Image (cartoon, one colour):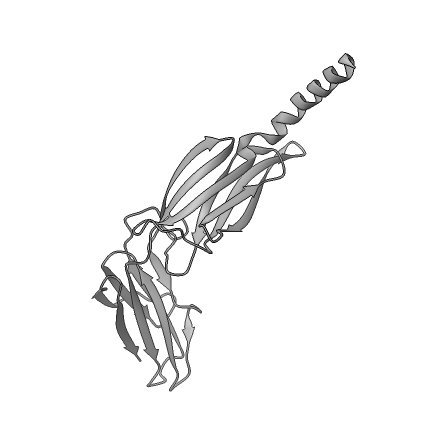
Length: 211
């Protein structure tokens, strides 16, 4: 009986390294301004693991529940730790502040920065001289923004293709209180058409482009 207990303890010791805390992640996502939980935010996670003596990259998505929380287990031995790479949620640009602690499983507290305002761009091809238009909006974020560090968003699709008489509308979320709309007609051309706009916080600003 004592020998059986000894073998059991040895087996547990060998299993423990495969269940180290870095292999899992628990997080809470809140709005940085209101402090309220952000429900339905998609968090993109990244980690590395060893396979056949080489490091492999793995990405997985998890979604926050009704309490703004998520839990994730890699199910394999992780090289390093499971990290948050991006966060996607309507009304938020993806900018966030993250604090990481360890308590059995790695814990992350994420404060997600909401959009300060909304810019609605209306584009109309009236003359028909061009059938495509390249449009982008530049803005500034004070917080970390991994998936768009340049602070530039583009129309979807890009370029925007419109026939004569057609019109398209697109909404851009804005960080900060100002933005610049730029447009051109050829891919290699300069962004020589532009307008600087003051976007009111928690409001919608409208801008029209006709060509």
